[in-house]
Amino acid sequence: MAMPEAQSSVDGPPTSVDLAEEYHASGVAEILDELDRELVGLKPVKQRIRETAALLLVERARRAMGLTHEAPSLHMSFTGNPGTGKTTVALRMANLLHRLGYIRKGHLVSVTRDDLVGQYIGHTAPKTKDILKKAMGGVLFIDEAYYLYRPDNERDYGQEAIEILLQVMENNRDDLVVILAGYAARMDRFFESNPGFRSRIAHHIDFPDYDDGELLSIAESMLSRQGYHFDAKAAAVMSDYIARRRRQPHFANARSIRNALDRARLRQANRLFEESVGPVNAEQLSTITARDISASRVFAMDQPNPLEISS
Amino acid sequence: MRITQGCFSFLPDLTDEQITAQVEYCLGKGWAIGVEHTDDPHPRNTYWEMWGNPMFDLKDAKGVMMELDDCRKAHPQDYIRLNAFDSSRGLETVTMSFIVNRPDIEPKLRMTRTESRGRSQHYAWETRR
Image (cartoon, rainbow over all chains, first blue to last red; front, side, top):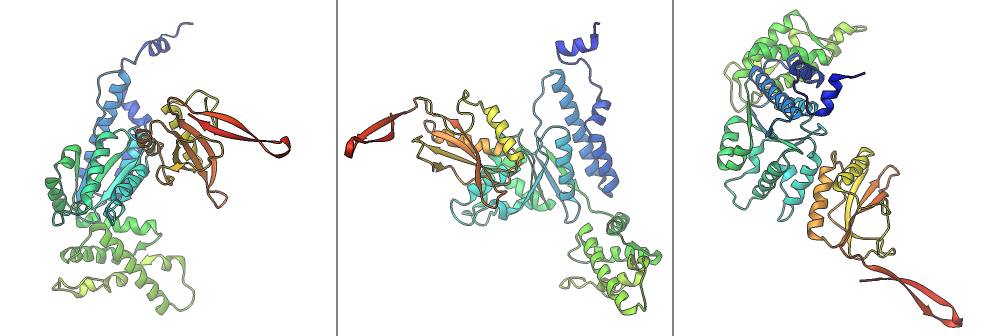
């Protein structure tokens, strides 16, 4: 009744690991597929996440076999323009790290400067520690992290928050992962003036802007999630809208698209109210027509005026 | 004399891993955890000094353990206990409490008798070092 396989696993660490099987068993494959399916574009980001996942998987296999391994530093920085999906990816990242067993709980705590920095002397440390305690076992996502550091005011309390953060990032590497996010140029300046952060962050991931085709498919998927759809002409008008909107100030990628769609739904509701005689059917209620989009002020502005924000 | 109050006090002292497991249990129930310390373990001394506010909305025991470590560093020769607060009745009720730190030499509880009128006696407890 000898069971050689069972025997060897009792005697010591396994001598071989099937990475492909590990990949599927840990649920990482699922998350990466989901990422591919649900997030449009973002090729370099997905590539980096894939690489990171591979590294973590290999590290885990090494640990299982008893090879020397060092807990990898997982702190990251996400840089990119507004509306490029940094928060969304952070959420997926938390899930991914949880599946791989690098964080225990897998929740995301999203904060900005206001949540970390206090109003008066002695207020900052407890506030920052409070947030850190809540983030333990998960991911701490600091949006627009460069606001923590204000070079023009040397008595700013942000510095205190930075010091506590750095200390925890170093000492509690097993307990939480910190992700800093913000616009690329300002993040670079932030890292230059805080070399401690740069050296503690191993993964810098840059989020590119979406191109027009990607934004259109984002628009379509946003609508279908809300149970709406474009009619045939509306899709063409929308892509025209995207091209024009991009040239105007305050363009925020997917966020601008979401706002545009919200306003299109508003116009659609108004149109239904004013024009419909008799009952409306489900098809009418969920169709965005070309008129709903072309009424936007973006089309009226041939010479963009930087002082005006489109509506 | 070994002070026994709260949960687990008749057991050997909990290790940090065991404390972590207990805290995980509390957090899993949605309870908030507070750290308190005192140098006077008299049974009538209900209100110990608070080490910071009770911690709400934690997901992981590590946050509590960090506070506990800080408290131990500041008061190594004090009694420290963790209180778990249950808010499901609309007010924060202490629903679990256990000692996680003891001084090296624990004080004694001594009974004193006072003679009063009509040969009756009054009893009291006193902490003695």
